[in-house]
Length: 179
Image (cartoon, rainbow, N blue to C red; front, side, top):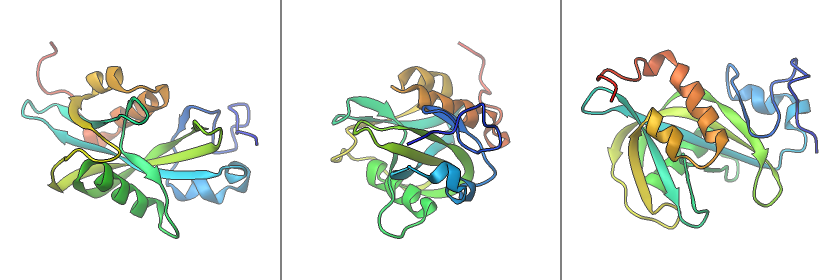
């Protein structure tokens, strides 16, 4: 099992726990040098909105079985696409029906079972639904980007937030005066 390193800039991936932005999710799986050895393929969403103050807020989920705060995501099932998996997983974990937005990027890392894993993310906006406690998530919070950065458990999620924060679609992140 080999991960692509920064010393190999011609390849789309990166070292474990790094986020790499590409033009589309298709590039992640089409490059055989990158895809080789990946055994867990997942997808998720950065669910976002403008709060009452006009500032950007994102959904962060508490997963008690993992004892962590993260973004909604999960493994692909059967022949579903990454996009289908992202929409399904966000709904299953949050109860929110979301519209798929802009492709954000992906993270690759070794999961808790020591398997190479890739998670591909999209922006998502809520169309309907409401959160109810479920088997995977016991708490959902809408928080500002700075608070999310403090709340998430993993550095890879902070990397996803960094990329999210640079997208034109979510600018400006803050419209209210800083506290």
